[in-house]
Image (cartoon, rainbow, N blue to C red; front, side, top):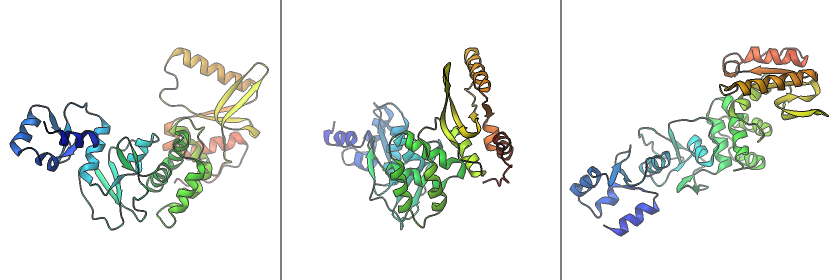
Length: 303
């Protein structure tokens, strides 16, 4: 056993290149170590993994980082996943490098040249990646508008960055694609949003010209109190997103109906929307909400 090689493998989080292995072992020995299960091949040519370590997304990302090259760092949704606020679940792994970067086409990897470079990279879980605030801003600029507020809300909810840091990062991206949309969204970001779909629903309201709703609206009196995901206190209107997990059991359904009745008894109007409303019928959702608020229906142009 070559301890220098295994110290290098450990320092690299369990992944290493065939070039590193060749400094100690012959091609035949490398094939034997792979055949025996001591090492295993990654998805990317020229990158191996310590076979004693379990397969995981983390090892896959470390292997991809070696394949992409030491001058690149994880970015976009890949970095967001490392920081704990990815809402896209994009299977493609994203890396960023300097503006003059020559494109490197590898399966499952997208490389982004950036005028911002990667000198601000930080290390997390053994992988170099863009800082949290920059990561969130990059995702917002490079993805569909409906995912922007969900990303910013999730970034704040993760406590990896603050709204002030998001504002600074947005200013640093002056002149880049969709930076105006990013800057308009940052003031609306709120860590109290409990799910990406609630954030997407809220963005539809804002984008549709409705008054900006509040989050976690408390309604209470001497008999108790309840909280609404999203609402307009001055109009006594609440809006909630109902996902597939909303009524998994009979008890959950009963609790939900009792809560609904409790709120309506106190003159609150509670609206319920689903993914179909948010993604496919936003104009109808906005019109329904505007009517409940007693407002003229805005002319909605789907973004």
